Length: 213
Image 1 (tube, rainbow, N blue to C red):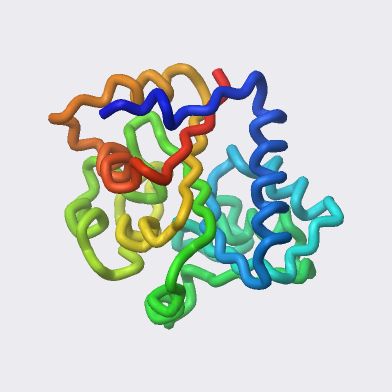
Image 2: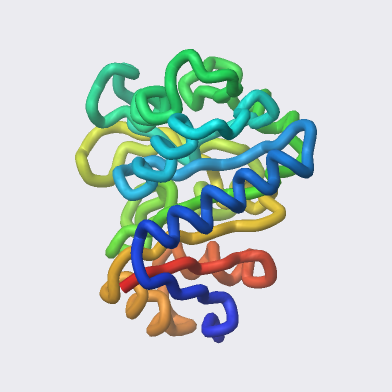
């Protein structure tokens, strides 16, 4: 799998965050309604805080997280709680909660996403699709939008978008922080069963790997 043409290198995380901010700003200026999948975790926190602190209007955006831990929103492990804290609870944007009882129906009603921002772990997982999870095949091949997960670290139950749902994105930006993660991507072989291989192989024409090392 040749990835070299899909990689953009940045000299610092600040420059990478600046690129992402301008990308989101541009999408918002071009569309009345903009659907974006956002990554959880700590890596994009600075980007989300900048979005919340800026004069960027968020009213035309509909955000949904790629995955979340099934914990209360005020729990430190909650991605949804992190997003509200960084963007601002009173900010004028729409967030579809993965914890909603009808989230499957809500996601099925979205024809496409303008952008998906995803991270990757050193074990080759993305969203909450982990290499050794018991329902890995379902997360990678199901036509449903979400999958409930009982694996991962920290060991708390999770909910994740399936690969099928993520593939509705017109463009995917994969955030890779550090040489070790970049080496993992560049050295994937055809026999690898890491989840990230399936994301790359099905989205090769629309994925951009952004990295600073």
